[in-house]
Amino acid sequence: MTRTHHPGPPRFVDVGDSVELAPRNPRSDVAGTVTWTLVDRPSESTATVGDDPVVHLDPDEPGSDHHELAAPDGIHEQTVRALPSHHRTARFAFGATLLPGDVETLSAVGPFDEFRLGHGRPVREDDEYVLDVPLPPGDHYAIFADDDFEHFQRVETTVDGPGRPRVHLDATVDGASPRRVVWEVVLPLSKAGLATVFIFTFLAGWTEFVVAQTVLSTEQYTLPVGLYLLVSEYSTPWPRFSAFALTFALPIMLVYLVSQRYIEDGLSFGGVEG
Image (cartoon, rainbow, N blue to C red; front, side, top):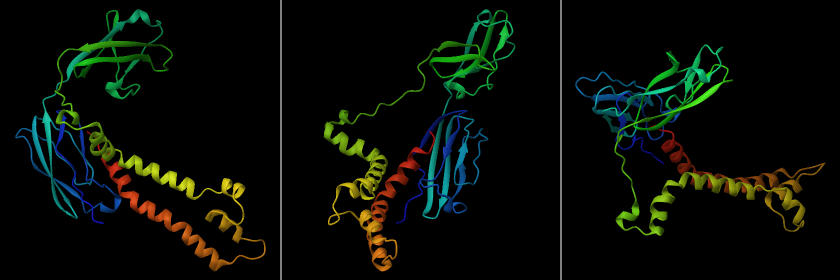
């Protein structure tokens, strides 16, 4: 079955942030046959992309970057709209007297740097340790700690401003009933998870051996128990064993073939940043 490599809808990102561009199915077997080309960008921008199947774009000017993805199933367009950065310089500060006098170097970690210890170094100004970080509007916190994390202090700050407008999507606004919301919104988004649960549930029941061997009689048994009973100490009827084994394996193969596209689509959908 042929599947599209279309990279998806337009992407939105702040200037200075990175966005990942990838085909819908960035498998290893398409390497060399899928390439990106920058078609247009803002006049003062110097942002570029590589020619690998998965690339990262770092917009440096507000505006629209237009890209083309050359794939085995054709040429696909991808637009990245870069918005002016809504980050503002925020300052984390706390009194130096709150830490022992033998602490010489500090690190500041938090959601803004993915809690990477040693990435941000506060500096001492008079009786305070301070760290300036560009942050979006809202409430933020940082943890100031020594390199051994024996002494630490949580510091909070607030950045004023409305931030980037957010759109709230609600199917009930268009008159959708709860049943329609589940059927047309929730279930399509849950297909990958439901397919995975279905496969594991089916395998658990289809390959179950211990309970079937203990509870069922020798006249009514499942295929795993039947395969086990065919093997004896002195001989094994291999033609019959092979027929049973093929019958046992076919439903598993069919279930996976039916469900695999939902799992792959779910992995591809959730594996792209932004």
